Image: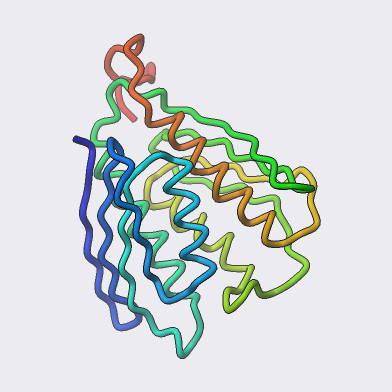
Length: 194
């Protein structure tokens, strides 16, 4: 099975994460940041993967360290679970509507890290969550799994809907990319490795 367990402890956060790409349960997210827990749950459910996250961070400062470090650990777990990436589609794209909002995620599990983030949020907070951390999370994720990740809000007004659209779209695009395709022999690259 394609799975990974990672524990990361720093002076700022303590994170334990388990991931299984070939199972859908359990999904249990506990970071201490309610809105972020909701977004990660959507990401896992729409990506059809089992994800358990327990994070204890310095939330008395703010949620920046917790959100970024969860992105780091999730990226590391995805990289480990994918192994040599033999047989996977490699690419994934998803458009997700959420009422008035339309978000897009397109990614390439290329072994090269890059993030293009084209989204803005009118409100600096969603609950106790700083909206600027959405980009921070996706940057940490993309750089640690080593993928190209393009995120865009094509249109929308509601900040919750925008965020939800991006997390769902990323989960769905990732599911497409990590799916093993019987028509692909070896690694989906002319280089012979990703």
